[in-house]
Image 1 (cartoon, rainbow, N blue to C red):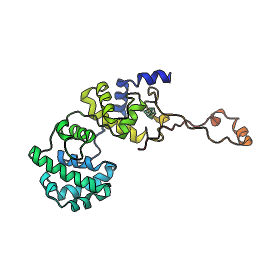
Image 2 (image 1 turned 120 degrees about the horizontal axis):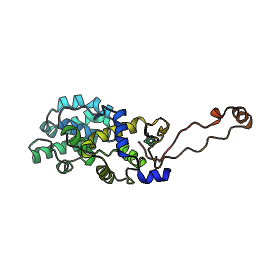
Image 3 (image 1 turned 45 degrees about the vertical axis):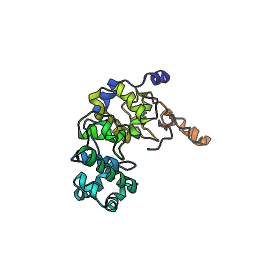
Length: 251
Ligand code: SF4
């Protein structure tokens, strides 16, 4: 049965309906008011939590309100303001180079196509799709570590490469739902389908999810006979708790 489900993958309609019920208001976790702010916040979110990014961006955006402000800034000042997001030398360099490119190539306006966005420093398909989906209302699938992991477990893709995962999902998910689907899957990954210990026993998708790559943990150390005997009087208590572990992917 599980092998059959693995080949088939989770049912898309049921998956989308369940995610909508679970996360009706799912949206981008980054705070922003303009496409530029979302672009910068998304660059900062690499290897960093949305919460941390949201802590640094108010001061950063107040100090540098425009593309030109970022382009002409002392890079050390950008670094100082974003230091707590990690990798701040590279991030500051990318932000400044990216803003220079926006000035030179796009008259100071953040471009609104995937092809143009991915030509900017520090912007890959993931960042570009976040900006497209949430700043320009152009549907985009954002394959981060959560969406990739969940898609494999649900049998929606067999690929590790985010671009291949994105293309597999683009074929299966109706275009107008791409952005919302991404937000909801990412939330499900954060709350239920964790990297190391997915809580399948609490998951609303458990009956239809093939759980590809999710394996039951090895049995706990054998209890001594006296304890074992005393517990055997209650079948419910003698059953091991249902929990699962999974592949070694870090979150
Ligand atoms: S928690 Fe388990 S059942 Fe739920 S989506 Fe993840 S692997 Fe599937």
